[in-house]
Length: 370
Image 1 (cartoon, helix red, strand yellow):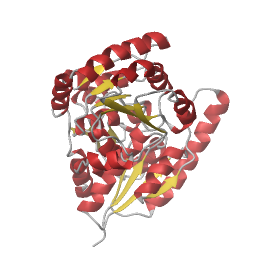
Image 2 (tube, rainbow, N blue to C red; image 1 turned 90 degrees about the vertical axis):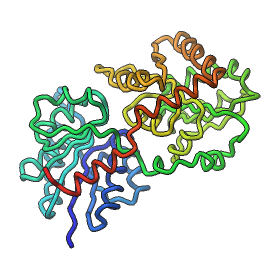
Image 3 (cartoon, rainbow, N blue to C red; image 1 turned 90 degrees about the horizontal axis):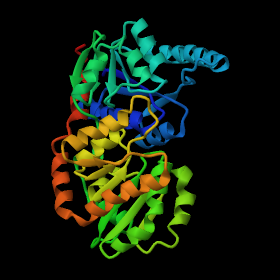
Image 4 (cartoon, rainbow, N blue to C red; image 1 turned 135 degrees about the vertical axis):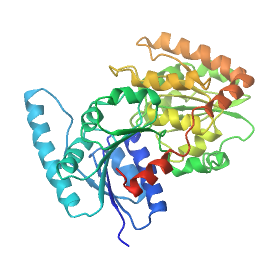
């Protein structure tokens, strides 16, 4: 029996790639004869994640949209080239479906599919869709979203819109926090504060936490820190921990995030759509510091869903480093002292988590009932 050909298109961040990989893996469980292929960007994060997954992928030359004359020409040229490359592979395939997952790479692939009467689905996990996804919605037959509030942003689309949650990697199905504790050689008798800026790191979070290390030393008897810096910031952050008395592990990146989040008693991190879904799935109380430079403030809105459920608090990533650190310390100190509150926040995560999202999306794509 010939299986369906399912092409995922998008990338540039872990937030685009991880949900797509989760859905792809579930597709292959449901229909082993299916063929899954990714069209992705040339950024290192795409190759890193897809390389580990073992899934086939093609790097496209697409670039981001810009109105500057030189960059506009590059955008148009790379868009056309990407359409041709994607079109060649899609045209050869029978029973094909194209799934846009966000980022500028998705648009030329989805447009090519639409022009060739190939069904187009869209995965949008942020509460506010990005520019590319707003364009792709014109061509989509079905749109999968994480939040009910997202539906109004696609009101003009003819597509069916399904609120399913955010697909998460398979590690979240069988959480084993002891594995992360063992791999990082952590102290089983101490509580764990996890600091993360997602796959690329967050300089402002790094700076704020490092400036508080002297005060965090006061928790050295009960707590330990795992600080994921992002590869570009590793050396700088590592050096700032030199005099810290609180037990700590500093790393640029860590692959087993499901089990590390499950091991954490408290998380300080960004609030991208995937991060929010992962905190909830791991029942990890969180202090969310939304990325402040998006015009639509979608990370702030994402974090708000956790706050509504009693699962998180928000600390604004203020421009002034001292003010940012002071606000963070107010929340950190209280939550590190207050186990009962952390327990209530962990319970609140259950009201947000949607562990079946990858299965629901995969089932629909395999059926192909568009």
